Structures are given as C-alpha cells and as structure tokens.
Image (cartoon, rainbow, N blue to C red; front, side, top):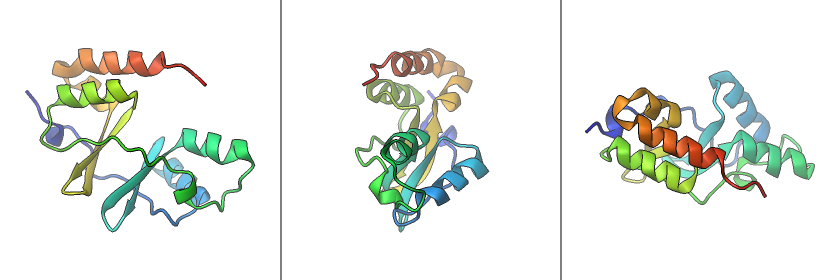
Length: 140
C-alpha cells in the first residue's frame, strides 16, 4: 500500500497569518491553486481557501487588506507522511475536504489533493467516495 509521503506535493505555496487577503489571492492565482496553508515559522496555523475569501471577505464587505488570520479556517484536519493513501482518502471523505495538509512534528511538509489520490490506482475508489461526499454536502 502506497503512503502519503510518495504522493504528496512538497513544494507548497504558503502564506503567513499577518499577510493580506489580497496577497493570498495573488499567490493563489500565481500558483493556480484554490487553497493555501497558513504557516508561521514552519507550523501550520490554518488553511485559506478561495471559498473563505468569497464568503468571509467579499460577501461581508471586507477589503483586500484584511489580514489572512481573520479569514482563514483554523479547525484543521491534517495527515502525516506515513499514513496510507487509503487512510488519507477516508479522512478527506469524512471531513469533506479536497486538500489535506501533511504535517510532521508540527511542521507542514506537504499537501495531498483529491486529484493526487485519483491518479493512484489503489485509491481511486476512495478518492471517488471523497469527491462524492464533498459534492453532495448540504449548502447552508
């Protein structure tokens, strides 16, 4: 069974909590990603998604100078490099997330996305299940 370590992306764009939403959006555009881990001195503090920006910034009339720390999600779910892809898929499905930050000794070491799991033949069913669960979540 393949581990997360062999599948995760290790060159991850990150942002610090005191940077602005405008800087985060620019970084997302530059790296063509929909989420950026928020890191302080190597330690994962939160995740910022394009959805966070839309709902917690734009929809509330905040401007681009709002600090990332005021918008980021802090209720984090993370994995570790030694977990199996099957376990990562199940964790993502259970928590209805598309991206799983990978942490080793409190430091961010990578990220696994649903697309990464779908590429791996052994976890296609789990990736499909995770995507189905996320796609059918209730919208509030």
